[in-house]
Image (cartoon, rainbow, N blue to C red; front, side, top):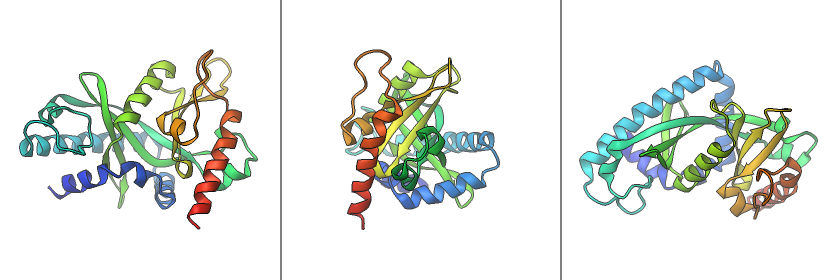
Length: 237
């Protein structure tokens, strides 16, 4: 199965691939061409379930025993994949680096959809990784598996801050800062605050607040983000 081989090759580099400004531009265009958020959700969900079933079948048939080194999902035995499930998905949002550096608007107002969807994969209700889905030549396809650390961190944050429909949260990826956040909207007044995920805590040396709800205001994030984005952009010139 050529698609499976490609996925395994991509999985190890999935986080690096998603940090590419070129990919951001491509997926932003895909998002603009999509008919509606619901059509995106349906198309991405259908593709990830189809592709994951093929991925599992291929791996179970071709690997026995312990998962090989570098395997993209956190399983002790490849045969465990037979019990793995696609749990839930979410669109990924971002902020253009030019807007972020200019800083003339609130973070929420600067946020834009990328067109990328990611899905949490679980084994016995525990997250073992993410599947990344995007439009390729107009068709939804799973392009990578991996990110088990983010899957666990994100799932814990969803459990702490999301409502039953997850309608009050969005996943935000600042590509040029290699940082992910869970954006959380207040049910009382709609105010937006942020839970820094593992990548943001590592890249920006951020910590969740020790008191209260553990969320950070945009004012806590903007300066560290601008510094990181400017540094990374300067290094590529």
